[in-house]
Image (cartoon, rainbow, N blue to C red; front, side, top):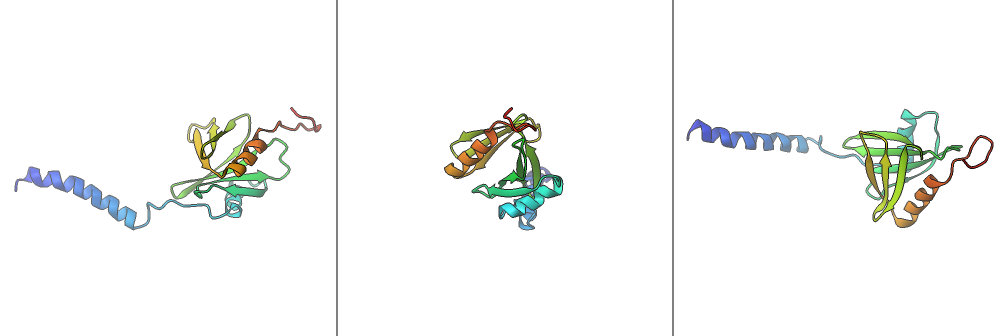
Length: 145
């Protein structure tokens, strides 16, 4: 067998072997969010000034939406699984947009690292979050902005 033939097989097989070893070692495992209080703890690490009081985890366990205490600006806490890491955001109507879609909600953000996220939710829960996020802001004097 010539060296060229051996190298043609070793390259792809070697790559597959390394990818397989990584997968078997558990480094390819995506995390999930077990419940909203877990997401609230993770969110509070990055945003300690905002206290989550209620939340919802998506049906696939990859996204959590958090209602924040005394938040008159109608911001929503957001936690998403990205592989084995967690990403948190403070969603605000002036920089984020939530729309209904077939599987729940579609979030569009002014964020080049995560411009679009689909959130899998049951219809009634998706409607609740859509309504909560799209209500008018309340100003410091209590009137709608």
